[in-house]
Image 1 (cartoon, rainbow, N blue to C red):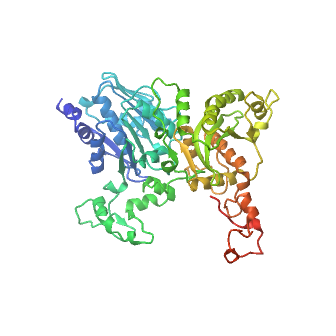
Image 2: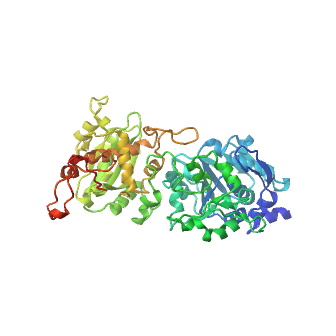
Image 3: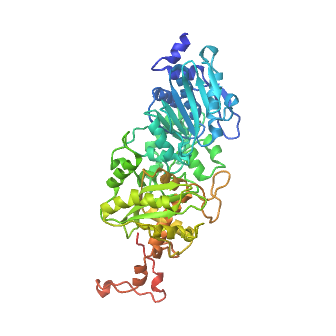
Length: 568
């Protein structure tokens, strides 16, 4: 009974429970067998358990093999063992990562870790838990953990005390999942992951200075075994006779590291024998993600690798208050659009017509015609609906508000496949045009190849002439996950390939048609520099506003069209 009370008490019970009674399987390197041991009282784990005892919104960035998955499941087991009427939820990318067997699950899955932690407890602490596939229940306390898989609808449901988005940076529907879980879990949501670039929800929360999430970073240098014999690329080495832990010695070295005197200066770079062994067969992107906690260097295979959700995604709540409990979605959309659309700027709609697939529409406002800057403010996607359904939606939800605020009609750009005849011998394009309040869709001229236009849009994003509202959660996810083919390890296949056609393609294609057909004359030249039609025609001509001595020299060996101009 005394041990039970020590584990259940607050504060301090969670840490006592973890370090006194829990066992974990620790792996020190790839290809090496794990070792079962009492949960190690590392300083960073003490900090983790102390901070996580009371549920709160937390963001945890980490290096690989830091025992963080085990630590999270200790928290979840402690919750349902000592709390009544308590519900937790854990979510990851794949089913087998959440639960790989129910009552016989292995230590490789999250709920399997809960089971093995429970089995390691002394009998007087083993609550009568029932292990079923994707759920662990404590019937006596009416408490449970349920597992979910990272689909677009995950996380939506009954209220939950505490939840975890495991590998949050790698979830394909991260923004949509986050929205659902954030609503269901009031103040107890955890995001835990290695980085995966700066285009996802994990990175967005990490760099948001106003977020409610408390932020923790657990770097491999804090692990005593991994940081043994730590050194820096500048030549510094730890003093093995010094009783101070390796990460403390490295921290003292950091401010005086010679690396800071380079031109340009760069930060100290920690290394160790463990690090060198792990990094030996890893790609630079994998090292950046799994070891260095580098957001800038960890992206792999994305078409829009320069898309940065920390800078290019804006929160709609900066413009309008959140949806009220009694407010229908249509009414909330109208209130949101009225707050975000700017007077006087044209609005555009991209259409990707679904052929045995989803039809996707994206709504943007062109705020700078020269730099082709668009603020993408809404998106709409449905499957198995006719052209009439979308005609009604556009003319009810978007067109009236756009007309009211900008005094301009919507401009539509769409997939050329929309000219194909349907079973009624009419195409989508003709049907939309023939209906009362017609929708006229521009579908040409088609200039250039798809990869050229993707490079074109990538350059626009790189130049920061691009914004997207967090209202469009699925569109934001698509921008972060639209990718080229990869091998089994997740690394891009060498060569030039068209992107993978999947659930992320539809809204990206809809966006692409706007750029292709609105700015068809501004495709790259051979130097990949954007050239406007006017610039090509004016190239090499004297400037009437400058005196002769300031005119550029004429190069008779080049045609005017070959002059490289940048109109971004």
